[in-house]
Amino acid sequence: MSRFEALLSPGSIGRLVLRNRIVMTPMGTNQERSDGHLGEAILRYYEERARGGVGLVIAGVASVCWPDGAANPNQAAISDDRFLPDWREFAQRCHAHGAKSAVQLQHAGKVAVEDMARGRPLWVPSVPELKAGDLYSHLSREERQQATAALRAPGARVAFHEMRAAEITSLIEAFASAAARAQRAGVDGVEIHAGHGYAIASFLSPASNHRTDDWGGTLEGRARLLVETLRAVRARVGADYPVWVRLDGCELRIADGISREAARQTAALAAEAGADAIHVSAYADPTSGAAFTEAPLVHAPGGFLELAAGIRKRVEVPVIAVGRIAPEKAEEVLRTGVADFVAMGRKLLADPELPRKLAASREAAVRPCLYQYRCVGNVFLRKAARCVVNPFMGRETWLPLAPAERARTLVVVGGGPVGLEAARLGAQRGHRVVLFEREAAPGGRARLAAHVSPEMRLYLRWAASQARAEGVELRLGEAADTRAVREVAPDAVWLASGARRQPAPVVGAGVPVIEAEAMLEAVPLEQGDLQLGASFDAALPGPRIAIRGGDVIAVKLAEFLAQAGRAVLLLGPGPEACWAPEMAPPRRWRALDQLERQRARLVSGVRELSLSPGAL
Image (cartoon, rainbow, N blue to C red):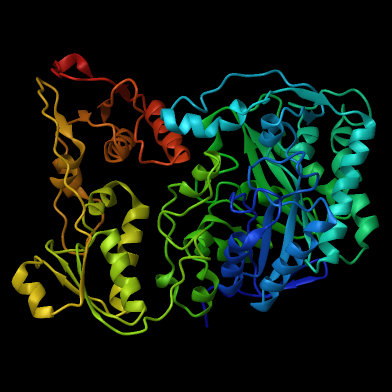
C-alpha cells in the first residue's frame, strides 16, 4: 500500500467524485490557438496529465468574453457556442483516462493585456493610480521587447474604463453563459477565477475598488460581484452541477489590499452563495518581479498553507490548497485537516505521471521540479510554456516517445543532465545504451550547481537512478577514447560532453576574488555525495568574498553565500547585459531580490579589477 493513503483516497466536490485528491491547478500556458480554440497542442498537454493519474484536470483561464478580457495572445475561449466542440473534446480526453474535467472561467480585467494590444479600455471597478515598478528592470533587451510587445502593437494603449452597472450585469451574464456552455459540453465542473488581480478580484480588493455604490464600500459590497456571479451561475446550471471559486487568501505588498480576515469572510459569502469549494491562492504587487515570486507564483514551499487553513476553519465546503506542496507535505495537509484537496501545477509539468508513480510506491521515480520557472517565464515573455526538466511538456503532439523499430547499440559521451536524459530515453525506447563519463560520479558540471541547489541535487540523483533503472550501462571514471568506444561497437555515438568556460583574469588585493565555477570546483565531492557540509565551508576563503561573473552560476553562488552570512561583492556583466540571462525572469527576480535583502553588492561593467581590504 502506498504511504500516500490520504492523498490517493477518493474525495468529493459537491456531486463530483474524484479518484484521488490531486488536482491539476489551472495555469495559463499560451499553448492554445490564437483564435480562442483549444487546438491539439493544449488538448494533448491536458490528456497527458489525465493519463498520469490526476484526479481532476482544471483547464486554465478560459475567457468568458473573448476576445475581450484576454490576458494571453494564445488563450482558450468559452464565450461562444462555436467553442463547444473544443470543450467536449477536452472532457472526453480526460474521461478516457479516468480523470474528471473542469474549466476555470476568467475575465482578466485590469490585466487584460490583449485589450491593451488592441486599444480596448480595461474594465475596472475604479480607475487605478498608475505605479512604476521594477518588473522590467532585470530583463535583457530581447526579453523586454518580448514582454512589452502588446504595448507596442499598432493602436495599443493603456486606458481604464470604470464599469457601469449595466456592464457589471453583462459580465455576470457572461460567466453564467460560460458555465452553462461547459455543462453542455460535458465538462464536470467550473471554477470561477476571483483572484490574481482579474476582474472579480479587483472588485474584492479595497486597494482597487474605491466605489461608493452597491458594488463597493463595505466588504459585502466589494464581494457583491462574486456573490451575484455565483447565484447567476447556479440559476443557469442547477444545484447539482459542481461550481467553485478561486480566491486570494490575501494580497501581499499591496497597500490596503485583501487581508486574511477579509478573505475568510469572502470565502464564507461565496459558500453561502453556492460555491461547492474554495481554491485558496494569493496575489501580490503586479509591478514587482520579486513580489510575483511570493504570489501568485509562490517560491516558498507550502507558502499558502496558512491561508488555506484559515479559510478551512471558516467554511463547511472543501478547501483546495495550492502552492509548491510536495507529496509528503500534501499527505500531512490532508491528514491534519488543513485542506481537503491539493492542487499541483509545476510538479505535474515536470512529471505528469506523478500520481500513478505515487500509487505504485515509486515516488523515487518522480521527476523533480527544479523551480526555475521557465514555464511561467515563457508565458510572461508571450511564448508557450516549457519545462527545463521535461522536454516533452508542450511538445506532446510532435515529440512522441515510441518504441524503436530496431534495437541498436548507442554510446553517449558525457554524464551531465543532457547525457543522462538522452541515455535514459534511448534505453526506454529499447536500445542498448552505454554512457561514458570521465568523472567518478554522474552529473557533469551540473554537480557544481548541486552545491548550492537542493533541487539540482534531487534532480541529478533522479536522472542517474532512472538511467540505471532503464538499463543504461554507466561507465563512470572512464573517458570515451577511441579504444573504449570501439569495444562497444556502437551504431551511433551521441556527444553530450558540454562546453568549457574560459575564466576571466582577475587581480585581487586583500579581498579574496574567485571565479564562481572555480570556487565550486574546489569543493571535494565524494562519488554519489552531493550534500553540503564542512568541506564546502572550509573551501571558502573568508567572510568577505568577491565573485567575478554575471551568469547563472555566479548569481546562484552569490545568493547562497549571502544567505550563509558572507559579505558578497558580485562583479558582473557590461551595462547592456542583464544578470544571469540563462535564468527565466521569475527565478532571476527572486535571486536578485534575495541578494539585495542580504545587502550583497552588485557591480556591473567591470573590466579591470583591483580590490583593497576595504572594498567589502
